[in-house]
Length: 499
Image (cartoon, rainbow, N blue to C red; front, top):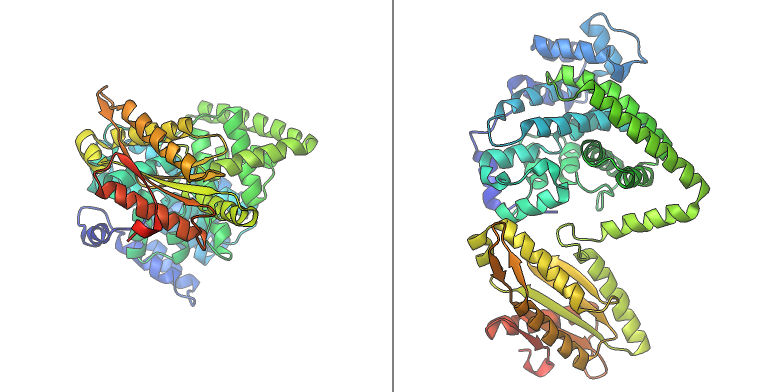
């Protein structure tokens, strides 16, 4: 998860050209945080904006609440929805109303609102399916999960120039934003909601909106965050490539994280199709064609039904899909190298084995030379291409049993089980030579040269380390020596020269 640089947080606090919630929204928010709210106060707040009052009436009588008694006046609608639900929905309508004012050229707002409204519908449906009492809050959290993208476009419009952000996987969008401005739309959106004094569960849901596992979130908030994240994932599948692989994958994710069976998820695609026109009307947007909706739901339902039958017949396939999903969770989305968490877990495991059995273990830190200058001179897309090129050359150079991981930014780390100091020296030579031979290409076809700096540390009978962190720190120290001595080289850690 990206950290929020202080200068960006300060800009969010002082920005005057981004819409802020209107007074009616702030009044609704104050009431929602009051444990002693009553029907009269909520009715007064909602009635202050006739358009919002009309929308509350429509949603109370809509397909989203089809099993409840029809309401003929605002008081009945408030009773049908409940006070907190009414306030949450009213807040949704007012926020969308003001955020729509940001729709000026240079950004695909149709695609943004298509995903946003669809995510809200999915969030509400998933919450209702699970019998949660905070379905409307999840509706709002799902609606706001990509709020930060509007802020990024408003304050840094150049970030999305030349790319189609709604045709790219969201983790890769986050990485692109991180490369451009030092943070991403999740962090910006959650920070803005914090500035607006939104409830903590909404802030947290936006902050973790691309992590279906809700790693690090505790208690009942974990389920809240998972539902919001799954709403976005389901929207991406709906809007993107709806092939058998992606539908099976989202079916597996929904079952794993929410406990919803694939065949039921297939049925829910039909339910969302019924609810989307309601959401479009409430938010005054025309986003979907009725024929397109039917084609999507037919394909999704058929695939997920078949998938459910296969799951029932074959536990082996379920285990394979779980393994595939687990593999995705340990990969860096940009480079397809393993991620830092996977590396650190593997380092602990291999260090314990090396200590127990007396075999060697080597760690190599790899740093791209002058990467910031490449980014500044050729652009962030060229930087992304170079990172992908380096990850591939590392995989090509090493054994299948070795681990190549992206440690962060332009830094990679290699884990070489059973490799002693002499063989690690050979790895350093091969990697540096291969880097000099390879070229990456910019979007306009210009070649960009690559050189690497490496730091190598080996755990063996001559070089003992008391823990995995010490071995890693030794490799980092050796990397520093390589950079200090002119880059484009490797250095092997030697304790008597470490100082």
